[in-house]
Length: 310
View 1: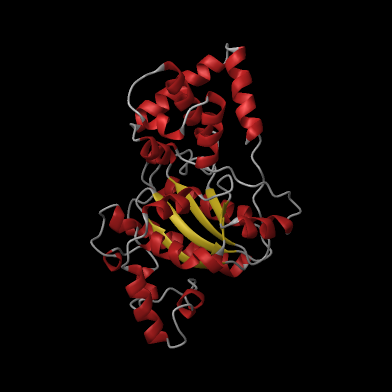
View 2 (view 1 turned 60 degrees about the vertical axis):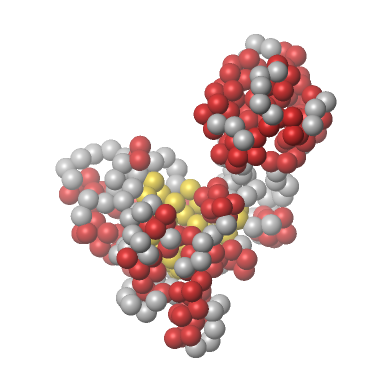
C-alpha cells in the first residue's frame, strides 16, 4: 500500500524521530552533537521553522518542530543529508546513517504539546542514561530551566503555558517535567493516532486534513478490531484472553493480531497486554495466519468480512 503524504500547513507542530540505521550509534563525540546544533541554527534561519524541544540520544533523535511555509520533508532532508555527510567524513565511512524514512507525527499542540515536551526530555531517564532530566547534556531541558542558552531553540511558547512570570513558569515547568507519564501516553507519543500520522482527537484530525483537502477517515481502535473478530467467530472478547489452544479461539486471536499489526496507529505490544499473552507468541501467530491466508480462500473471505465491518 502506498504511503500517504505528510500533512503540511503553516504553523503545524510535528514530533520528529530519526533513528540510526540498524539501531547503530549516530553520535561518536561531543563535536557531532555540536555540529548538529550548528545545522539547526542554520536551518532555523534559512527555512523559518522553530524547534520547541529536542533530545539527541546516542542512536536516535527526537525533535518538536513547528514549520512555516517550507514543508517538513525539505527541512529534515537538509538536516539528515548534511549530518550524514559530516559523520561519514569524520568516521571515514559511507552509506546511510539514518534508518529508512524518518517518523513524523502531526501534533495537536493545544492538548499534547506540554506532555510531548516532557516525554522527550525524559527519554534519557527512561533509558537510564541519567537519573534526572538535567543530568543529560544533549536535550533542551536545561534551557527550559534557565541553566543553558541555545539561540536557535524556542522555549517561550511552552513556558508561557505555565504562567506569565518567567521564573515562576520555569519552576512550574520543572515540577511538571518530574511527573511520570501514563503508560498509554508513551505509546501515543511514539506511534500517534489516526494511522500513525497524527496525535490528536477526531476533531483535530478533521481540521488538519481539511487544510490539505484530504478526506478524513476515522481511525480504527483496538476495541473495534477485537469486537469485529469476536462477532464473526461468535465468541466473547474475554475468550481471546483465556489460556489454551482451542482452534476457533486461536484462529480468532491470530486474526486479531494480524489486523493490529496492519493498523498503523496500533501496536501488538498493547494487544499482548490486553490478552495477557507473550508478545512473541502473538507475533508468531500473526505470521502463521498470513501464510494461511495465502492459500485459504475461506479464511480470506472471513477476514474481508471483518474488514468490511470495520
